[in-house]
Image 1: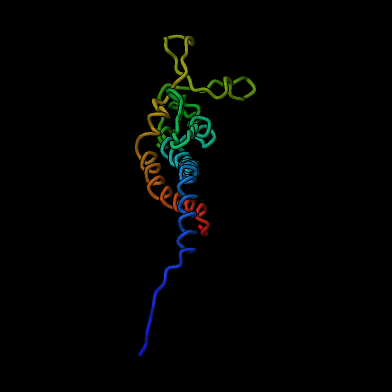
Image 2: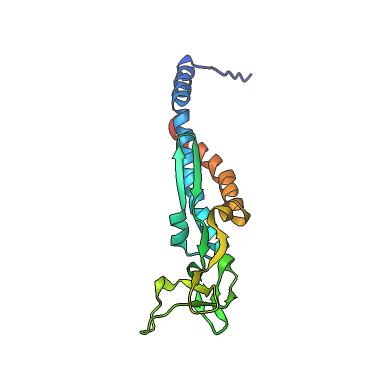
Length: 184
């Protein structure tokens, strides 16, 4: 006749209790680490998506989008007003200046880029339009694109939310495994 038994050793339970106490003390730290890492990874995705969505160069977006980690929260803030046309790969044509806000190239009729006698662009390549019947006054032209508004809409907002949904649970699991002494 075969006989089987199962035993619980008090030393094993004691070790488990100590592990759980350690986890309880360090759990907030694990959450903070997971949120910070998730936020950093989502910022990279937001910058990439915003670059595609707006048509601006990556360095312009990086300067405009700032991360603010604060304990159990992480936020992305952006600044910027109505962006000048010169930042959208503006180039002169016979009918006006061609630029690509929202990554859609079009011609802005009656506009021009001021050039010096030597052929180089003046005023940093700024796009202008005459506001009167004579040569002056002229006015710098803007695109109508606002980086803060674009950041919370379209593919950029969807990319941020998708990153949080997919990355945060994995990072939290990893950080908790580190606390409990397991590989993560």
